[in-house]
Image (tube, one colour):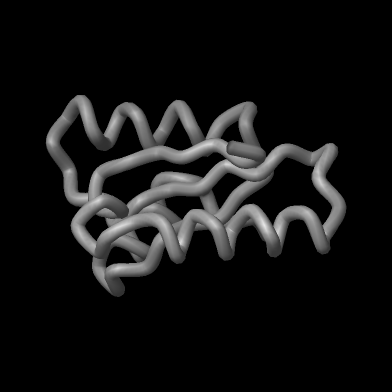
Length: 81
């Protein structure tokens, strides 16, 4: 049984976890709806399905090293940068 995207985003916000996804068809829309509705969100990173695992890790490391803690909250980032 799949967990609905809004429920994943609720849980991640409660736990202060940034969500990583390659589901651009639904997850991004739910994330933007949360932002529009001013519902808390710790952040979302959307990874391209075309990235290899190694390239995805490199991109994530660049993002982690380049952002301050407050720059994750209520943001959606797309990788590759």
